[in-house]
Image (cartoon, rainbow, N blue to C red; front, side, top):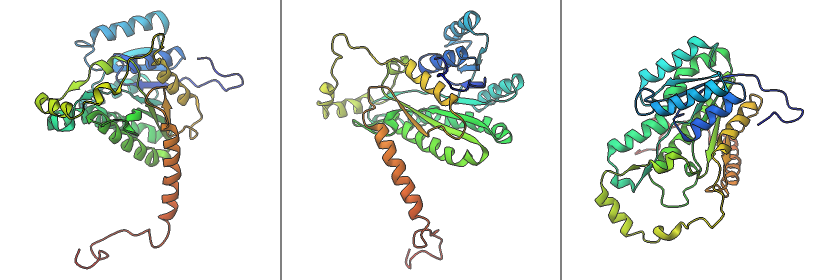
Length: 310
C-alpha cells in the first residue's frame, strides 16, 4: 500500500514477526518487506516441518525484497527465542517492531481437553508472545522506543457461541497485552492489539482436537442447534482477504509513536459490534479509573484493614 498523499514517509524499521510459516504471519512479513522494512520472518522447524515454507519465503525474498530474512524461532522454547533475538540484534541496530503472530487453535469443549493440552495452547498463544516480548524489551527500554503488536482475535473480546479453549487463550492474551500496554508506555514503547475476525487461513483447518472424544461427543449431543447455526456462504460470496490483517499491521507501524490505538478490529466476519464494544470498554475503564481516585475507593486491603472475622 503506498503512502497516503501528504503523509510523511515511514522510516524503515527492523521488524521481527513470529509464526511466518503460513497465514497472517507470511503475509505480514511479505507486506512489511515490500514496504522497505528489514523483516526477520521467524517460524519453528525451518529445517524440518516448515522447511518448505521457509524456502518459499527465502525464494520470494530473492525475487522481491532482500530485506527479508528467515530465522528459526519456537515461541514455546526460551532458548530458541533468545537465540533468534540475539541473532537479530547482532545484525541490526535494534528491534523496532515485534509482531506476535504465532498461534494455534483448538476445537472441543473445555472438559474434553487434558490439562497438558491446555497448558500447551497457553504456552503458544499467551506465554509465547511474552517470551518474545521479555527478550526484546530490555533494548527497547534502553532506546526508549519500540512497537509490540499482538495478533489476537475478536473471540478474545466477545463469545458469539459457546466459547472454548482457543477463545479462552485469546482472552488471556488480551489481558497480557493490555497490561503491557500501560506498563511500558512510560518508556516510550507502544503496545497495540490487532483483533481479526474469521478469515480463511491454514490455522483454521489445523485446530488441535480435544484428547477425550467421548466427552466431546457427549457435549455435541446436547448442542444440536450448533450443528446448523452456521450456514454455507451464498453463491458468489467473496471470503474475507487475510491481507487485511497485514495491511492493518502496516498502518499501525506508519502511525506516529504514542498515537497508535490500543485495539484494531479487522475483517467483516465475527466482528459485528466489537469495535463499539471496545469503545464502551474504554469509557467504562476511564470512568472506573476516575472513581478509584476517591478516598473511599482508593483502598489497599491489608490484614490490618480487613473487616473483623476475615
